[in-house]
Image 1 (cartoon, helix red, strand yellow):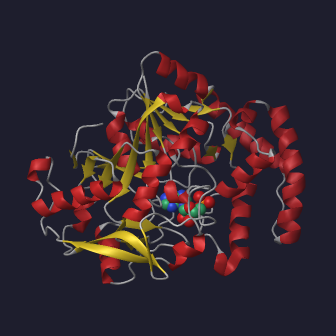
Image 2: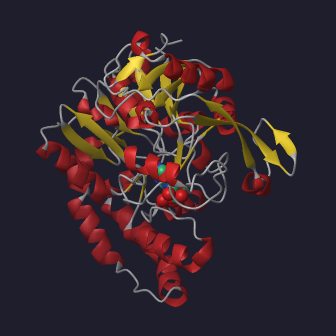
Image 3: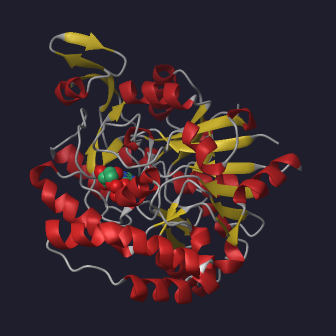
Length: 428
Ligand code: IMP
């Protein structure tokens, strides 16, 4: 059976978890393919709130096998804490499988993330300080430790010794921080994490292909989003992995021919956490309104998110680089009280109009949004569950987004609850 990818079309926090959870009802397997515990999914199920960072959203559906793919970076202590938290909430993590090839985030990664951000000062990236960038850097430099190394004490100690030989002087001499004791670290991780994670560590590539070959439905769950992608995002204000749909192939171990649907999760407005360009950012009372009504604070870091109007220049680019088949639009209800509702349809850069995203970062920094104003609906949408119940203006807004994006919207979210959504068009 073909696989489906869910990817964010903005700078993250589009509400991917909600739709992943919804789609998981028809899935046999849900796979995280990149990122780490920099992600944060809030799911509200039967009045209970779950905050997930590493475990795929599909864990809440008892028939789903949740997989942490090879492309993810795993802090094993965080993973264990999350599994314990889910178990305490009555959610069984016994089916969870973690790729032995996924790389580990260890304490020196987090320490380096913190000191390099401080070193950058005014130019800091605004990372989540979870050690994501340093862990992926070690992976690329081929000095990373992998999840499978937790099962081989000799290899774990050897690799840790090599890597700390380099990291300790860097931390101590360049950044004036205490060095790490390799033996104490090895002991802690091998004793606390190895045995606990052993039943979950697996050849996930094999598992995913077994599922596909036997007619199973596989959902590939992206974390972060298109414009935080290391290659396609607003570099250097990006994360260190590839959230775009192509990253799903690498991070799960499948080829593109297995994928037949790519859903772009698009918030009805745009938010961003951390530094970097944001042409449609609103620093006025409408921006404050979006923060308040949309509860736009980070799930993980509690940082206030920057908010702005929907940007269809970015959206069209996301359609291209991900080969989106359809959109899932989230948080439409957050716009209920706004009138007019503005949508950015182009950028003005030095007097020239651009309908597609300029490739040069400096142009994005200088871009002035060209807006089209649409009438608001001034109606509470949170109880709407069918397209026919939408006020005309809300329906017009959605159709306008479809026209601008060039792909249909299949699902629309109108509130945080699991059932607060409507099917706008049948799945393509
Ligand atoms: P890092 O992923 O912690 O290295 O952070 C790099 C950039 O990505 C920062 O601007 C973060 O705020 C942003 N970022 C990372 N993960 C997320 C996420 O899940 N949602 C939104 N922004 C994120």
